Every structure is written in C-alpha cells, then in structure tokens.
Amino acid sequence: MIDEHERAVALRYHPEQGELPTVTAKGRGAIAAQIKAIAAAEGIPLEKDADLVAVLDKLDIGSPIPTVAFAAVAEILAQLYRANAAVAASGGAPRS
Image (cartoon, rainbow, N blue to C red; front, side):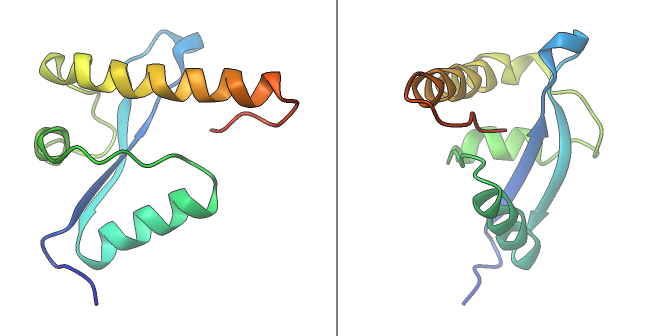
C-alpha cells in the first residue's frame, strides 16, 4: 500500500560546476515511491527529513535549493562524502 501523503524530492549536485544543488524530481504517493525505488536501485542513499522535503517540494523542477535549505542539504552531502570516502578506502565504488 502506498501512502498518498508520502513525499519525495530528488536533488542533483555537481560541485565542480560551481552550481547549487537543484531539484531533479519530486512527487507524492506513487510518484514518491517510484523516486525512492529508483534511488534505492541506483545505490543512492535516502535521507528522511520531512521539514526539508516540505521546503523543497514547493520548488519547480530544475530550481536551485533556497538559502533556508543550505544547512540541511550540506549536512546530507557531508554524510554522503564521508560514506564515499569510507567505500573508496575499502576498495569499493563511490555512490552517486
């Protein structure tokens, strides 16, 4: 059963391009479940933060994150970078 109130937002970030993270997908219910399933299948970590999703869900696809979301997104990116470093140190491939 899919929770129709469930929401998901996907971000893309390319620091080498000097751009802010941008919203690449968002949705509720079945769309949110599909976003999460694709992320899981691709090995992309999922982070649950209802407050952050509420802010990002208001943005259009392709929009950069707003300044109010910088700290929360930076914390998630830092966790991802640490995980990638640990995987690389063990000889594995980093996550997207």
